[in-house]
Structure formats: structure tokens, C-alpha cells
Length: 215
Image (cartoon, rainbow, N blue to C red; front, side, top):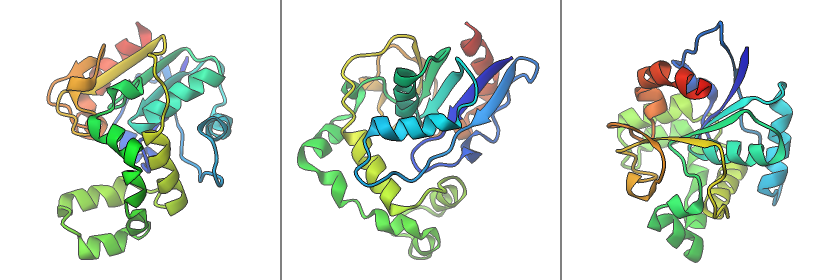
């Protein structure tokens, strides 16, 4: 039996994986969850605390978006069988220009993350966000603590991985607006896949993920 651990994207709960189904005679699925960072906590220390959720040796790690960065960092601290990232990046060279600009200007520190501490209030006033998207936020984005959001944004922008790690399998959509495909190298491309394809293209993953894990 292969233990497969899934790490959700930034602020998301494991509900983003609710439609992912792997053959139960081959795979044992486990969902990881975010914890609130300590003040000025380093990424490596935060990851060490997340590793406490892993109860198997040599697991397969699957991470979405920021979770993809996290599982790569986990692989630096413990032995893993395989690292699979979805809608993410292998190095900061795959970040779009706006993320590099934000790193240089600290623009991300101006994001009003406090608004997301109260999803009901955000939905009430909408702030120009489409109702369907707000419904998705309410369902899937369960970690709305401002300490976490500020830390996560800053950690992503300042991620300093410059070289592609070995044994990372990258699955990416060609319509991803967060990490545009033009910056991505050496990935399995999902046609018409967006940044949330783990949710709206789950059938592709159910059909292909078992083979990708086993290859």
C-alpha cells in the first residue's frame, strides 16, 4: 500500500481534494492541513512542524500551488518516494514577472489580507469579486487567519529555490493565470487546465494520477 499525502494550496482546506479518488487497493490517502505560523517563523521551521502530520516512511507527496512549494521543502527534510506538484513552480525562475516585482518592491505587503479574516463580510460587500468566486472562497479557503495569510504571501514571494530539484513531477494547466505556462518548464500539461484544476478537472487526475504515482 502506497501512502499518498496531499497538501492543499494557500489558505485552502483539504476539501479541494474532495473529488480525488485513487484505487483503494493500491493507495492510502492522507490530507495535510495548514497550521498558524509562529512570529517571524522560517519556512524550514514551519515545514518541520508540518512534518509531524506525516505518519509513514517514504510517502508520496502531492502539493497544489503553495502546497507544491511546501512538499518540495518537505522532501529536503525527510525521505520521500516521490514529489508531485500541481499548479505550482519548481523554482522561483518559474514565477511570473509580477511576483519578482513584488519581491523587489514589497508590494505584496500592501495586500489587505484582513479582509479575508471575515469571508461573510467580504461576500456582503463583494469588492468587485464575482459571486461564484466568493462561493468558492467560502467553501475551500478555510484558513483566513491574518498571521497565516501575511506569512504565506511573504514566504511565496521570497522563496529562494533557484535550481530544479531532482525527482519532482510537475503537472500544470495551460490556462493557469497565477503561474502562466510560458514560464513553466518540464511539466505534464493539462489542456485547458486553470489554477483550480484540482477542483474542476478532477476527472483528469482520477484517470492519470495513479499511473503518474506508479511510474
